[in-house]
Image 1: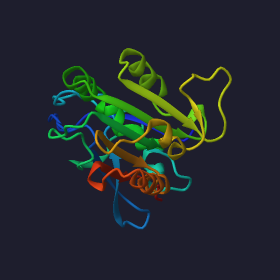
Image 2: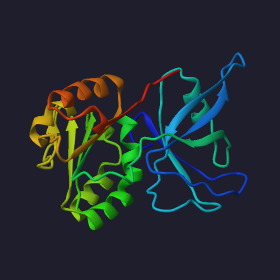
Image 3: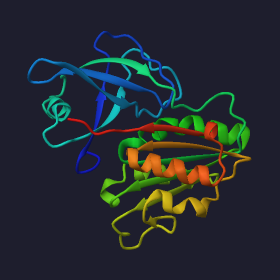
Length: 236
């Protein structure tokens, strides 16, 4: 458990085959409701990924628990060695090779920060090779729900070009880091000053946050093609 209602799960392919994916992509886990109806849930891959995953290498995802949820029951019922059926990878919420921007604005709430964890090795390369800057605005209610917080802080400490701004809606802890903010991620856009001439923004997480931040970024005149979105919907 990496938060009170979020589990970090590690799998390997049962067929022994490799899995290659682009940071930002997701897999779909297939299962059935109690009445036998087939369904699936999507989970971004959380691996700190900088190469193809060879045979036997782990596949990592973060799973939000929803009270009474069928997917929650599936994952909570897994023992070590348990199997799930999955397909993928899918998705285009990725860093694009043709980008020529000077800065990325990565904005997330909840498990929406998962793809940004997977992007860290690629961002380190872009910082080194292109001199880009990165700002990560991560929203949560409190410190205990701030997923992968220590990893993002360590990355920021090691890369001055990467600025990490955790935003806590229910107040700051004692001795909070100077870069920690009290409020919602969209409240701090003015502080980072979105710049249409150099910024590409990524929005991932709660649909209300994604919509509100999308509108706020448009008001700063950031062109819509420079705003990439992925909404996470909790579902039973």
